Image (cartoon, rainbow over all chains, first blue to last red; front, side):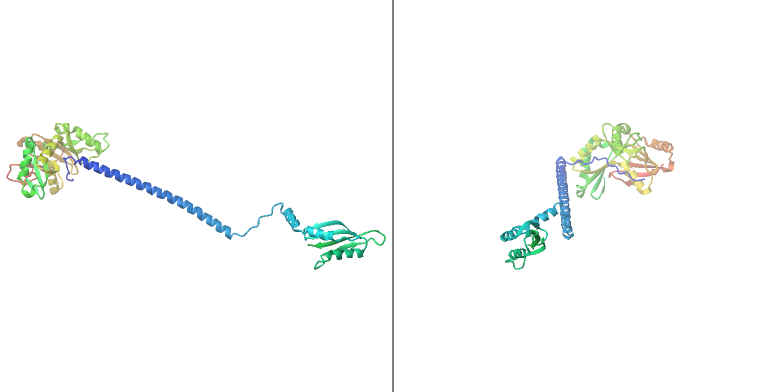
Length: 175
Length: 223
């Protein structure tokens, strides 16, 4: 059996000023604790935001690096690519020069019948009617006059024979 | 008067209540100069600090409720008038619990008298508890302890582990009737006569051991 620890004196009551002081200190401590907790929460929020921003930027960097190291894949040509390429070639073709060269030379016995300009290969093909071969060759010489190398050449010719009418020939030039 | 170091002890019984201020002043005045600033332990007689058993009450949920019940029932259980201050032992649901009651008016009067005499109080408890503690310290257990003071007879029963019965009888029965009363109580509590102890406290006795309260001396006897 343990001895009894009897105390009949009432517990001492602190004076009012001490209770007030303790209450004020307690309130101050609670306010300080609340402020500290709020600041801690704020710092946590900022840290989270910075983390998200950092991850976003790292993702961007990774994507940029991946794009820089990835092999270049040419885009598939659009449906109008062929037409566009053709138009571009025609735009580059020296149409005016070819026509000027033909207009500059005029000779009796040779008559251009049709002109075909092929952008593919910068080729100008002219079909002519001629009275005889001598005139046709003279015509070619006139067209090539002044060129460092003969630009116009005879592709094919067919004469109908004496008294049978005009022959036809095709001459070509590259530009 | 009994002193130990810087702590002084004062015994009070019901005969001194009418002149508490004078008792305190005289007691303080009798202290040696080096003990004037000491703290005081007040020991009350069993007529002033009255023990009773708080019975197990169904529905009591915690110690606070038991404390309120003990305070409200103290005037009836302890036979004291007015509001009471109650000390309650370790309370457990469904078990009787020792309570000690003292009139709040008396506590306030002692505090006021002590304050008026410049005495700082450290504790206030029944003298019979000193006798009980001293016996427990020396013997380790007690079954039935009777504390005989000038104004009360206090009987504490125990099962060896905790207090099972407690009552204070005042005025004190005539000395020739105390033994017979204790024998009857021993029989009713199923305690052998050899386990009954009497502690007699007297201010005027010339023999016996000094006890708290200074003027008191006490003797422990069997029946």
